[in-house]
Length: 321
Image (cartoon, rainbow, N blue to C red; front, side, top):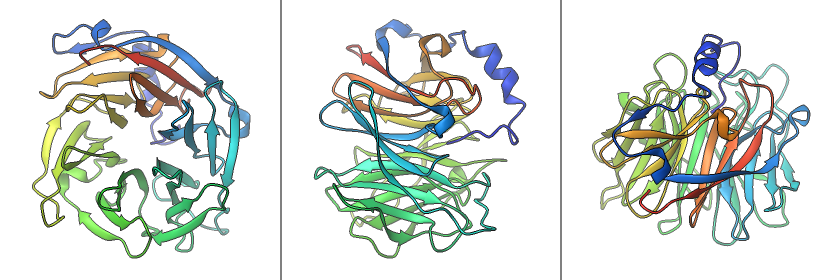
């Protein structure tokens, strides 16, 4: 999620103080989880290429959303950027909740190459879930409330359902992949914002929807019952204020989390403890999201605070992460 200069100026001091500092919670050393980071691409900030969310491509590249330019792009393994689509500009007078400007958020890829992504504009005609089939044009397939901010997006291909985390309304929406009317699947105090933005990143993993809350610094687990309803919310990690998106490192419950304002990626273990494994010294500039394919983590940095070098990093996940 984007951290705007006009809403969070006080965090600049925190960013400057922590950019080159590695802090830990728990006992595992940082070197045991992530190593060998490298730049995949340096992006064009002047053109609005600030990556907000990411999904991996089978050939080693990644698809990203550029929130500022309302664009979906593919970044090849050698760092080339190809714009796949530009979404319509919102009507005059439309104001996106919490952010003011249009916001292109979460993106996921289906096995057939179809991309799904979330767009928020503050207008009823554009806010919602969009689909882009290979070689096609973007199409809105489900409307979401204009007074909300749909942000993180997860796809459960087995059930044919998508789950969207709304950062303003504190709601997880469930939407058929074919499109249609969304359902408010979960809406609890744990998902609500505490001053700015609440529910942010979301993943479907091991029979549950996992959701990060930016303001509260938590990772939540919401079981998916046999009936498909939301079970009781469990807080699985805390102390991760400004957590944006996250990704699981494998079949277990360890995950890597993007800590946006602090220029950090943290390894969060199943017991909730965490260790910072990448910092600004590795090239992070306000990391927004991660995608993991095999033993490689791709980390997108939007440079929303630093205003220097939006980029895409790749890092090797070491055994035991």
